[in-house]
Length: 215
Image (cartoon, rainbow, N blue to C red; front, top):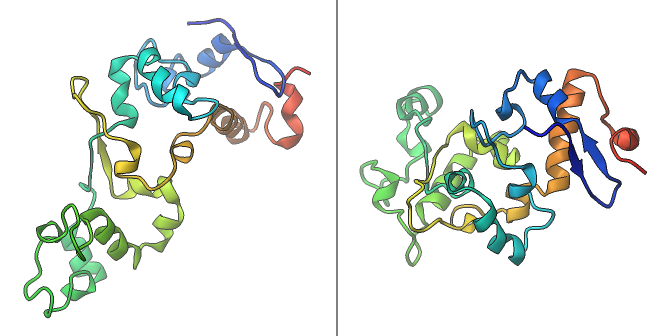
């Protein structure tokens, strides 16, 4: 574990007292290295949070990141294990199947959405788009949260380390990569200042820059 970490940036260098922060967190690396669980050797923040997500990062991160970290971002599927059909049918729809399913002219008997909505063809929406459009009719609050709202319904299934192909973010996400994964500056500001503000101690806020940044 490094004692101190020098963060070099245009806003002024920062010396992060890494050991002191680790002690405050009872040596729980995942408190800051949020993708690593209990790994005793987590990757540096800048390994995943690039200063800019460009061609150089796309090429370089494959060499700098350990293989067991690929599934952190490149997860092959996201299940909807948290979706409770009976709860929706009884408590929210009051037994009216057409509240979610098509009317009888399209769907004489309610069936699984995936029976028709698969990868998308002609005028049939792919499953993701059809389900999101239908769910958004009621769950406006979750969609207003953007990426943060996904975990309410979805559970990510991590990719296997020996998986030959890692899917691109755009295969599931419409959001640009630099919004899915914060840049280095945004990641540090959110994590560091967010924790300081939550704890009510340490520098946070726009007028506290030089408590961390050296002029």
